[in-house]
Every structure is written in C-alpha cells, then in structure tokens.
Length: 214
Image (cartoon, rainbow, N blue to C red; front, top):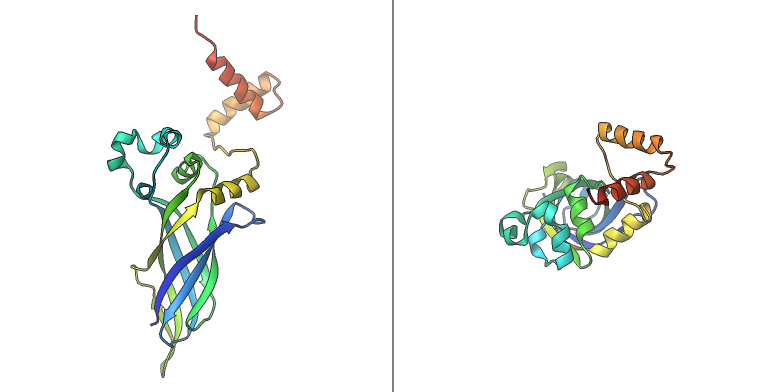
C-alpha cells in the first residue's frame, strides 16, 4: 500500500453551504509509484488549547471551560472539535482536496464556547486521519488497505477565519439552544407582555434581574 502523508495548506469559509462550514485544503501525498484509485478519508479534528497563550479577557471568558487559570495545568486538555470526511479522487504521487468541516454556533458545545472566547491569534488543531485506500498493486490488480492510525498533522487555524464564517452565516447574531420547558416559559413571558421580539423579552428579563432588591 502507498505510504500516505497529509498536510493542511489553508482553511477558508465555504460561503454558500446550507450550514456553516470551513474548507480545509489538504495536500495529500503518496510515496512510491503505486497509483491511488481513491481514498475514503475520515478525519477527527481536536483542539489543543495548551498550545497558545491567552489574554486577560480570553481567560475570563474561558473560565466556564477550564476554571481558573491557576488550574490550567490540569484542565487545559485536548478537546474534540468535530469529525469530517471526503473522497479523494485518483492520483499517483500528490493531489489537493478540500475537506469540508461542519461548524456549529450552538453555545452548548464546548468547541463553540472556545472559539467565541478568543479575540485573535490562532487555534492550534490536531487532525487525525483514518479511512480506506483503493490502489493498484503491480501484478495484483486493485487492492484495498486501511490508513494507519498514526497518520496525523497539526494546523493553526486563524481565529479571524472562524469569526468571518460565523459573521457571514449569522450576522450580528448568536444561536442558543434551550430546553423545551425553558423555551415555553420564555414564550409565555414574551406573549403575556406583548413583546414583539425575543431580544426584547430577554432584555426585559435582564433589566428586571438588575433591579436592586428592597
């Protein structure tokens, strides 16, 4: 089976997808003359938060994920971001393919909280590859092999790329998932007070919560 290697060249938003997605441009190489017919490629993407520094504002916003900075030596552990997959077409020694990476703006998801907490810089990522390789072996015809588990690569995703993508799909907005019973209570509150928008209902609740108690 050909010896494969993977490297991310760049990442950029996919502008017209049904949901937010990033395209990771993969450079795929195969050692030796054996032609590759195709690869059914799977990828697990992890965030490695210990591999960057954080400003005071970022530290405050990351408290929900990692606790106080004094404990970050124990809590700043790699976290799963997402899974992605793509079919790599036929090539002999080298090809490039876009790996579509689905993203969510759900703030119940740890990765979303992490991305949103960052102001600038880069997100350190680790991509771990697996999947099935279809290749041509001399004198043996079409062969099938599995990508070894040690195939991985690092990539530093610019924070601005993620923010630009979310600004494109959700301009001046954020997405929040609520339990059904909590939503029902909020809807009742909004309806009883004749508030036309969800923003006004939440602003009313926040204003009431800020009133000094007597």
